[in-house]
Length: 259
Image (cartoon, rainbow, N blue to C red; front, side):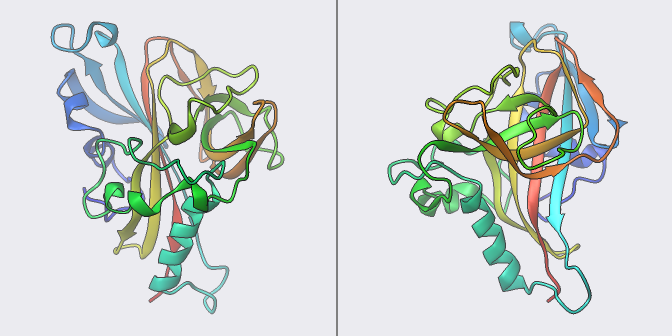
């Protein structure tokens, strides 16, 4: 599967999006749906995987938020969807800083035809919409749909935004993922379903245990006490990350177009 699919529809689709060196460390690879948004990928080898991963199981959690037209007479055009997708990247981004970019925060398994490194020079935090004192994009696992844009009670774990991770605060009383939020795809096109999208990823190989039913992309203030959800997806039942489980989180955000 290439960047031409905004929605990962089968277990094999999901597996194809995981960095190949990670898959080579697996002893057993038998992908199957655990829930309608979680795929069990396989078990890490007891011989050739890093010692801290041996015997542990790898899962992928897949979520998406693709905005649809309200009715038949108000769709985006291709150009409109491209512009909105790029604006989305800047709007969930912060704090503003001309010296900070996404360089070094690109997922190594970036998708063909939407390699973020080709546009990383233009993706600067000087163009972000979140001002000083607010950090984004965070990734939050959710126990349920938020009751408001600032509902922190549904957050079960979080990952910091990679470009500003050293200064971004931890979220109060929530477990932190072992990895930061990275860009996987920028302005990718799903020509079959007529959509443009960005894709964020984060990996959690920590020993933290928590349950989640959804995922959101959002922000935090500089204390970690005040958060906001910019977009979220809670498509199904809750699943639990065990202390030995490794999770690869995908969040796809974008816009459908008509012509």
